[in-house]
Length: 285
Image (tube, rainbow, N blue to C red; front, side, top):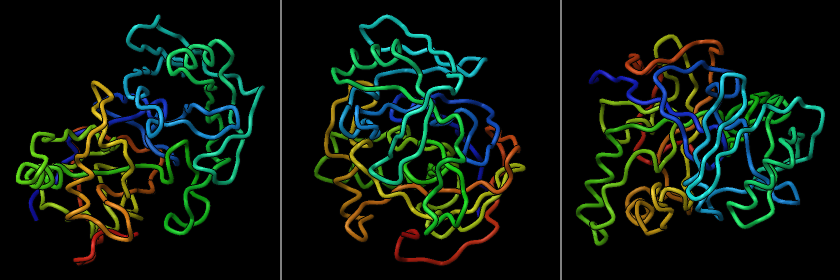
């Protein structure tokens, strides 16, 4: 097997907003430190994402040393948000699943995001990710989770993106490619190896950290949205639907559960496949 290397680390402080590319990151039981600990919700407490509000992809949050946020958006004054003390909570849901408590960030943050998006929203913080669990059908019981869709981390490979972009270039919508990796919003990007080999990975080591690979990632509309303009087009879903479609969904990337909380990941770390299965039918799903 060709040598595999961790080539990118990304965290997304606010769910569905822009991310931060970093050189090192500490692994926590629910994912990378600082990843998806903040989220916007509507008046009913349901998550608001870039699926409906494409402009969220133009909002840039940056983590501060004290656990708060500095946030900017085109045409708006910057916002500074302190980490909530956790004395005021609200019941929230992610895609209608079991409700759980999250800390309220406060009226100033709510008003700023509501103005930017033109919709009444509230900013909340996952002060205790143990209140929510990853999907036990794949992750197993008792895996804590931040505000991610269903699992602690997402991994993607450069080889698969290169293969996908080659298919886009040869297809009917070649003018919409190539698609950058950031469209898929992975936490971990692996370089080297063969396209789609990750479909068969079941356990991996990256540097000193180990992970279970529990499920493929079925993709929503967010990867079709330009990260610089928020314009939504057809690719990469159009091409994935022709080549990576199973069970009524399209698939790119793999969901992970961390096994070694406290480990530090660093760009350049060696990636070792500890367990894999031969598969010709896509990822676990």
